[in-house]
Image (cartoon, rainbow, N blue to C red; front, side, top):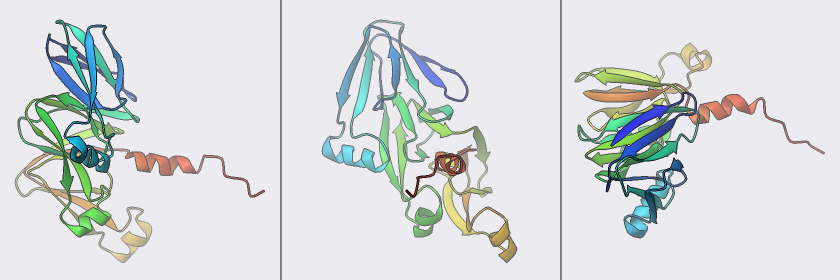
Length: 227
């Protein structure tokens, strides 16, 4: 399989497959495909798998695409302004924000990850339920805004605003901490909590979470009339 990512603000992922290669995606992600691509919609994992995907922000159904000849192409589009990030899951599983999954090869499993710490689930910006990608091979993930990749050494920590965590390797520990200082809390504009990520492992941060974009745009939307 060969791939290329085209565009910037609303990118498209284009894949060139060999005969027999198969890839699956979230529902509604496909933008175009050559005539030799076969498509099959499936409730993979039965009802239990469908319920798990709904919890992680995806459709109950997945779409599977297979090539009937070498060089068949298929393209998937980003749902929001942002970036498409390729990830080799063979290194280790990764934990993603809800609705981040775009597509993957068959050997990658889309699962569910529960935040065990109450504080992280309530105040970490990602909620209790996240997506988990495991297995082997390539997966492609949607990141809101710009994407910044960092490699954390063992014990190295970084503090980020809640909602800025797009994805991290399973070896990374995620927690939350309260902002210190009365003036910082009242006037700092960063809220009460920050998310702490501690290595070892890779993390992918996003500069404009979609919820932040919605909040910024809300002041410019028409207000309902009181009449």
